[in-house]
Amino acid sequence: MRLSLSTVALFLMLTIPAVSQENCTVPLPPVLTLVSVQPETGNIDISWNPSPSTNIAAYIVYTYNETTAGWISVDTIKDPSITNYTYLTSATKYQIVKFVVAAYRLPLAPGKDGCPSELSNSLSTIFCSTAFDTCRAKIAVMWNKYQDAPKKVTGYTIFVSENSGPLIPKYDTPAIADSYSINTFSTDANYCYAIRASLDDATFSFSNKTCIVTSFQNPPSWISTDYVRVNENKDIELAWSADPSSEITRYVLEKAGTSFSTVASLSASGSMVFYTDRNADLTKINYYRLKAINNCDLAALTSEVSSNILPVIRNSGNQLEIDWNQVVTGTHSHEYELMINTGSGYRFLASTDTSTAYSAGLADIVFDLTAGQLCFQVRAGQKNPVGSAGESISSEACFSPGETVTVPNLFTPNNDLLNDLFRPVMSFTPSAYHLVISDRDGKVLFESGDFNESWDGSDAVQGVYLWTLRVTAPSGKKISKTGTVAIKK
Image (cartoon, rainbow, N blue to C red; front, side, top):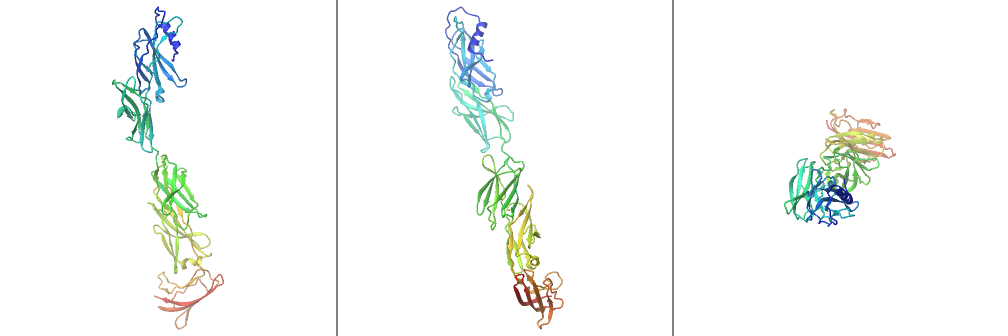
């Protein structure tokens, strides 16, 4: 119970025998010598030297009230031989607590409330606090300096408790210190700290105990590229999977032509990160990597480098050569599918596990052409040991055959299913067609008006033969060609 000075005086009048004196000489104040916190309980032990004046009946303990900006009494010690007191409180967990003590003397003067001394010198508790800097992996322990009077501070000792163990002295600092940095600790451990001020008379003043858990923000252990897709708007769509146990949700996307630079700050949606690059140059390979950013604004993990697939077509006589780059330059493998569009939508053409090249015979695909272009697209299915399996899609690579006619100069009709037939290769479906094959004597061995019909060479021996071709292209263009073809059996 907190008592006012007048209440204390009344209490003393009722409990302390009166001495018949008419006047009261104000006693000298005691000297407050020590204020120390019990780290485990938070209670405060207070000690003082007795007042040198006689007839001291009691001591009154005061603490400072920040709200009223004044001293308020917290208790009265009725036995003047007792010069210490324990103040029960939880305030030491949150703030510095200040104290003074006054002596109370009898007798009372007529019409007076009592005879208290002036307030003693003040002393404050040591308040200890901690801060865990996860960015630099350091624990900062901080405290206010203990007063240097009436006793001089000779140094401070930091006591440490790990995982509910006892507080033990660990680090020493000079008397001028008010903080200490600790970088040796275990992760996900509970540490408690208290400060002890050593005084020049071999006594000590302790602080409160403050605790902290050394938990770091859990970063992802992996980031996996799920796909890099070129959509119908010719934008590049990207998706990544990240370790779902990660506590990081902030990411930075970097893009490179020759060197990487930041192009976007992204947030995870669950364990997924998405981005659409609307400024991609699809004539080039665009490289991307994703960085997980922790709460220190540092990259905790960087993904593998991924890129869009860029197919390239080369026409080499009767063959189309299609090459493309790998979609990811990291550790994941891919299955590639080559798709073809001859005018009625994309369909499967071929697949490969490791190769990034394909050769297509023009004769095998040109007769399906219903538009002016042959277009190709590469799709990559990811074999990913972590994260989600996704499919990357390349941009289109198109080839315009034009109204061209190519005629083989050799075939081998030996029934091995390889190059067994002879017919012209056209990049279009002709509206008129006439093919004649003869020997050197002018004897006609084969004649056809059907562009789908081939000569099997069954009525010819090994040698060289003449052919004549007349076709009309869809544009109305008339094409006439003659040449020779060799049969090898």
